[in-house]
Image 1 (tube, rainbow, N blue to C red):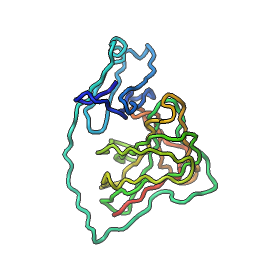
Image 2: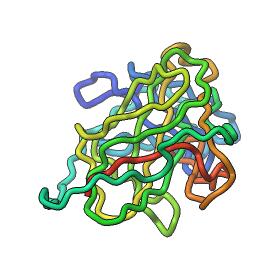
Image 3: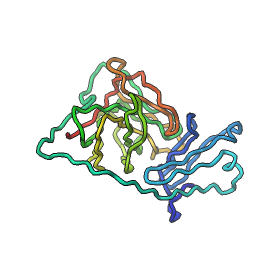
Image 4: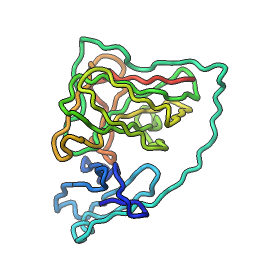
Length: 251
């Protein structure tokens, strides 16, 4: 179980072994399940969450402990001020915003939460306020799932450091069609090109069962999408380079 300093359960914590596909996300009650083999005894498991310090435990430590409780401490960040002139604000749509019939399907399908799909965002000018994230769901067999939106620096065309300041968590009940996530309450301001990602963190219908969500897309166009199986895994360039996903910014 993962908890805050006051012993309250801490949900949606990313858990995993860096550089591997071994990883998961804690459920809302702070509990988590992670399948580990004994040949990983000396590997280090990282526990990380937005707004909290990072904790590390070796697999051996977790095996030996009869009561696996991980407590994360609060961590504060000093944010710089960004000024945006209201007199020149314009709305800009980036990425895909119209449904296309000629598509392939790609997306999440796994038993362990943490799958992530990231899109490169290149606005005409900065700073830009990120208002909405839109994506087209071709098929979602679940009645309800929890998704998280993350913001990453653009590190030479690959998602870099996570610069998300607040947990942007949404519950999706959409079985198919366009989904629009309102990011305005989180006041996300970008000062340069960045990546925005969609991360599956919990399936409310069956937390231990298979989750799948398929997006419409194609192999044509400029490569700009990346995927990974968990927060501590390496990013992989997606072959479905035109996933129907878009962002609305004001700049």
